[in-house]
Image (cartoon, rainbow, N blue to C red; front, top):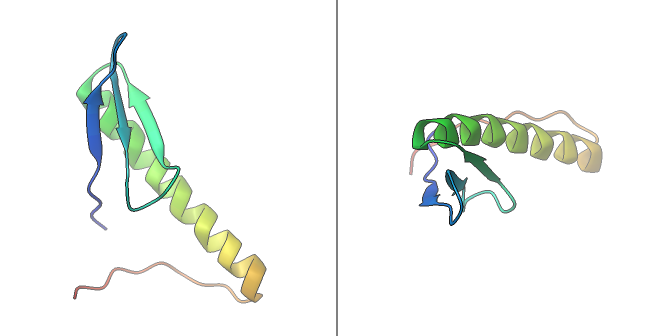
Length: 69
């Protein structure tokens, strides 16, 4: 899956990064590379959490797949 992220230099030190497609999905890192690696892990966690919530609400397991429009 491909997600667009917003990478910004922090006021103090390092970088902050967020994924607008997943509200609340934010991370940070000491360098741009660290921040981008960290947001990848955070995105995976957000997607897993969404799948678990869907299963809890609907009572049926689901999986996340990519579609092209």
